[in-house]
Image (cartoon, rainbow, N blue to C red; front, side, top):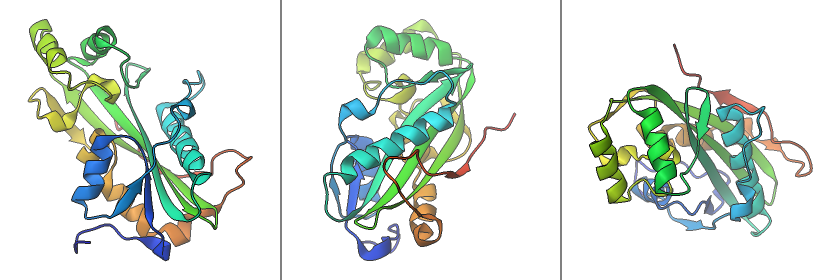
Length: 221
């Protein structure tokens, strides 16, 4: 592990509860050795009408960690969920090209936000903490030809809001917050959460609701 790697509390092996290659790359770049166990896709059930974007990603991150928890004997689970939010709508992963086009057309020329929920869960002592990170972005008023060219690249596949900041598009600008959050895992916040895990983690009753969120970044006007 490099000197710049994230802390590894409790001396537990790290388990990344995600099938996302982007989250895996971020963890590898930080210098971690870790196992990957993808949660059951059924855990990512639909949006509740009363949920805010922060509440949604917090709930899904918690449920992903809970799902993987049941399959290991020991480990520090890191689970995350990411969505974009624009004009009061929550934008997850597009189901197909047409859906991706609709998302990009909505986002073009607007300020919007990307939310990632992070859940850390230690096994076997069954303690967890949950947090939500928000990044504000602006997408330039791109034309239809630019949208179609991006759709042709298929780099939108599996990405919340149908775009990837890491793709280097000059029509995306971060206004505030973490760049790695837009990719799918805010590494600065994760570092903080891991460093303070022993202070903030709470015993978990798996039959109860997710634990209180420690902090939510809120977009500024």
